[in-house]
Image 1: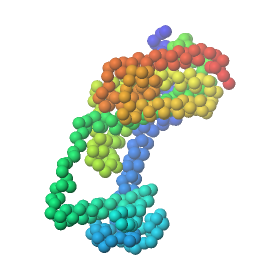
Image 2 (image 1 turned 135 degrees about the vertical axis):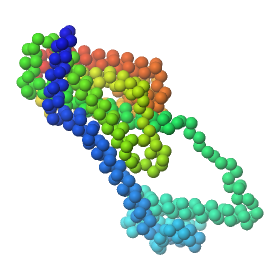
Image 3 (image 1 turned 45 degrees about the vertical axis):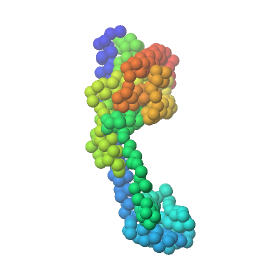
Image 4 (image 1 turned 90 degrees about the horizontal axis):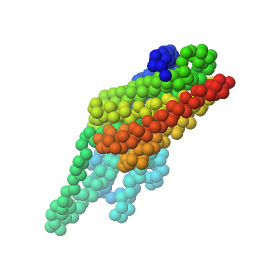
Length: 388
């Protein structure tokens, strides 16, 4: 094999990719512009829905039925507007009231529409008011019996989370980052691969390429490197865009802990290097296997129908690999796609062992080599190459 031939083919494919509008949209516009826009819009929408639900919960009345004066007084002290009602279920479902309260002996039932954020917010206000009333009654009964209210709290339970902010952030990011990166690698590589395979057929340039003084293996390597570059660019742009959007945006999370986890991104130089090394064999594997599949198509539309099932196959193991609590074992490190997703999660958590990392890397390199061999053999089959 001659390096200058591979470089020439690689440059030719990269130039073709930059001239293709659909490819640039999938590689650049989608991860850089669309994803931050969608995250920003969805974040603002979630915040607006939460704020509107809380405001409506304060303005809408709560229906009460057979409630004692003490219950009514506790709810009114909490600033809750009360109305009388008979059929609390229908009133809540018809949204004439935010929630309902019915007292029956020692049981106070809160009627709520769990699918309605306003009703849920109103029910939470009712619950807080009734809990305060219950505690006050208990303390009053204890005082009347001459018993100290301290018996209610003989000891205090405190939860001490030994996982630092970095590890908690790694858990949150690890559950989704591997899945998103792998998904974007395969989806972002579809258009470049289609363009450099069946696109060559449609443009009638495949024959000219084969007439060039280059071996078939050199052509496959050049095309594979170009596809791998496109896949890596998509993944890196996706990562940068996601990090910027979540770190810089006002993410819709009520608890300070959740906001801190989104703001803390465990991406130091060592972590980034390990993630890149983990993704490198997957990029070779994705480029090779998609080239082999796309070569069978007669048109870009047909190639898309061939590659879409591959994307569906990638989604499940990539999603399962990011599940929290799953223990990484050497055996699981042999499962393609799944191993990369779980390794990225382990890297972000900071508990990736070199043994599992090495097994994952070597296994994916083997799969990438097999996929490249398949792509080369497919490219050498002229019945497939000139299928029309």
